[in-house]
Length: 242
Ligand code: BTN
Image (cartoon, rainbow, N blue to C red; front, top):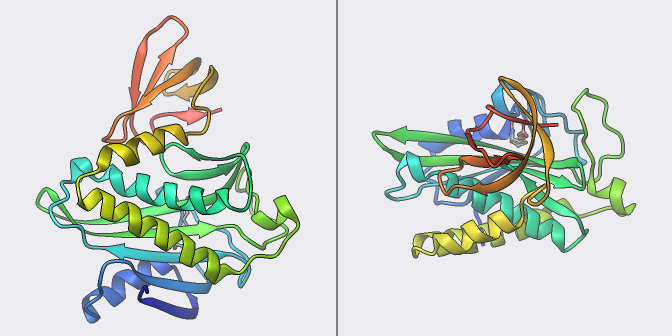
């Protein structure tokens, strides 16, 4: 059983959960679920479009003990796999677009915003905000390629059941991580990657080039291999999938 706080509306569940934190002594996996957000936030200052009452918009907090910031990519891996595995029960062709977007074929079905509270070299707490497009039938913003579960299958889904499944899978993987089984999670993550094999066009600060994904390092660095076998490392936002 998870500690799930349900509210009708808030600005952003990530921001609201952060505020609730010092007021309440929350256990790991405490979750704030909102039916609607007035200023949902995306990565790098973008906004997150989600029609009220139609989609899953929630944030979960964890308090990892002794997780150095340099190892914190494990949080991304755990939660992106939890969403992917939940969606695998409903649809095929789900993958994790590095670092933590969830894709159905070439379209984005879920975004994850992770905000860490860092003290010294350790992550004291991490808020994982998840926006999963579920029952929305039309997207209006200029987000490049959104899609929802309902657009794929024509069916309506229960938001709270999906939430429960995501949290169950994430908690199981979090336990694996706490017991030191990081390698298994990392292998599953790499096996789930969007465009994990074959050559595709990427764009970095020097322009476009063809490359394939060689691996994602456990610290989250994406290693690309160009056609002439040059290996190039990239951190988040240094590279774009075209
Ligand atoms: C992205 O840009 O891909 C990340 C989107 C994350 C959206 C979710 S919705 C719930 C939580 N609250 C927010 O304000 N953002 C995250």
